[in-house]
Length: 410
Length: 131
Picture (tube, rainbow over the protein chains, first blue to last red):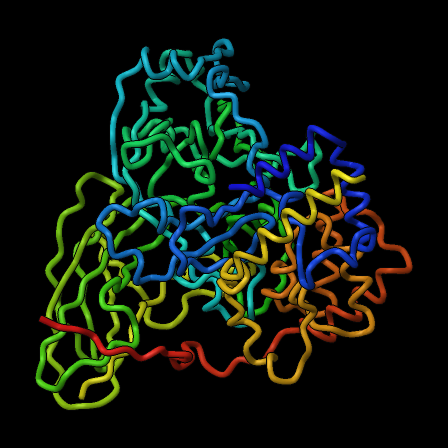
């Protein structure tokens, strides 16, 4: 986009600091600036470029962009409908030819660095469809309001990722018996632009890291990973909070303790060990909090869009997806009477482990009027979605309450 | 400085030709306040006498959406400031802290809730074409 060219042109001519200083005062050329104008070339590139016009911007610094639920109707989510949750700023310069991945940490026999080309040549590639869902998806449903992006239910996608298995790389490097956790490192910039700080550096226990579906990926939906989704290399771990799938990946540390990178501390991506009453403040320590692992069972109605008006006597075709973190979904049901009765839907098996499952059904309405169609999934352990918002928690994580659409008949 | 001016005007014209960029922003969180409060067009923040201080202290690192999308008590906002000072290189606010907290408490405090699943709202009805 031209704004980026403007920015680059400017950076050639003068220092960013000088410009920032000039802009910070907000008055130097105020008389020349259109009202309400923000100098976008000082900020990141436009994350909305190439995205659907219906995407919902939760924030633009860092970029956090949500997908309206009806846009998630595709079986494999295309990039224009994928949510973005960034913690820092997209790397300013991405040198693909010299991009490397370094495996280090207390529990490697010796650190090792691979170029992108070596990764592609040395290891067998695999392709999986994987559900990545923000741990805070659904946060806006909690009362009192929890801290963070006020996501509806659209911070989720299931794309097709291609790369090599992390376990093949770790086996090639050589891992010591005391390995407990892995933590990723990426090239995104901290919001403060302090180069010593990482914006996010999370990870998973070694057992999850060694699963077949845990990929070091360079392709998404058959092409290079898009810039805002981690180009050129991303750790992709399905079924867990998407924040463990590190973008702009440059390193993996194999740790002999729980990884302690940015956003592993405080109550980030953690739940109270013991349930708390809504609004309760508890100390942000390990004594009180545990790290979120598998995401809970969930389902969406992706067709039709909420607000559908239909003719009397017509059946309504409904469809959507369901997923359950590390588990599979065994049943999806819909209700048009606020949960008094449920109708079981047709449910497909996942294309691979950790992919979402597609469901569909037809519904007949008994009389004209206002209806809500609710959807509920049950996982293979027999755990179903709650209809009410589940346990309130200070970070507003894991709201997997049943979703619904409004329908008017007649 | 001439180049700076040209770059700014260029970007400004560009932005003006893309009004949908700002029109797309989802302000549903603010809907309940929209009728009675005036918003600063630059930041979307509620206008009051301490707004200038919030803009000076808070907008160099992050989007103002991080303020407008959240509701905290005075103590809750203070905890956010302390957290940014501990983790995000936020400076000591000094005398500015009081007006900043006054502003946040006055304009972005928690609102009362009525239900664990509120009624669906803002439904945009449309005629569904069926086969």
